[in-house]
Length: 230
Image (tube, rainbow, N blue to C red; front, top):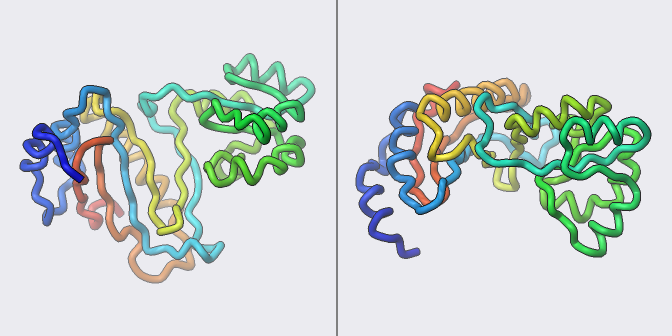
């Protein structure tokens, strides 16, 4: 992949063989975010887990203190008085059975997070093949299957992110935007790492955090010293 002049210049500031502490890494990520748009800052966490074993799955959600810098569209599956509750909480879309063909047949996916009350999971389950591969299936561990619709919507709008292992046992999550201050990014990152360290499977033998890299959308990856993150 050919990189532009700005990227090449910015990347010169990074020692690819080094492992940085968080403060220095965040400073470098911001310096390397030279695109014309406000780049997303992401954390990529390679774990020693084997996600094929249920007891080594790492999954959960955490509210970042400064949000993600992205406005998130929330779809809520609800019925009865929970419909009005979801609307009052600020959900972008609220519905039930009638949304199934729209998502299944028309390919409507104009939302970022799906919340469902437990009594709607029979309906939502029919969308497993569509929502599952996109990581949009509501899940109790992530707080997206709940009767407390107001809290779920408020948390998501405030900057709640979901983290989970991918097929290669890496967690990829946004921690903010390049326009955030270094302090805001550091706060968000620390909140994320606290949650991920707490989610360490008790059955795991060996090293939990194999590598942690911070990067912006178009910038180079910057490796962190994992020993300082546990």
